[in-house]
Image 1: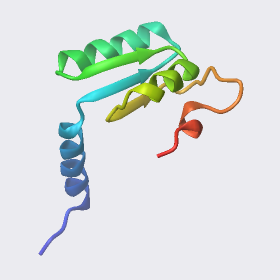
Image 2: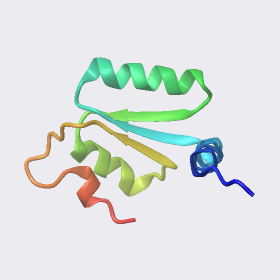
Image 3: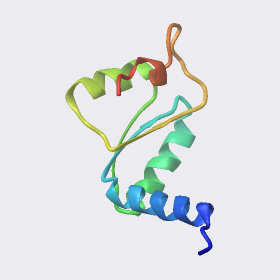
Image 4: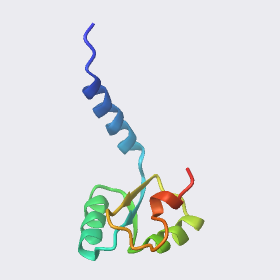
Length: 87
């Protein structure tokens, strides 16, 4: 029997995305942040957005998200949010 790993990954990704309801967008670039929020909201997701890693950490103290989209450039002078979140 032939096994296509790429197709299985694609199906797994679609399943994972279908389970996502709440998304946090972290991006210091405001136009990029707004466009991501609008795109996600137009597809039915509940979205919160912040402009800094510190704002994200404050929000994460009180709320839970299924997915966090992090911009490429961190504004933190210490560790980026990806290094401060414990899984």
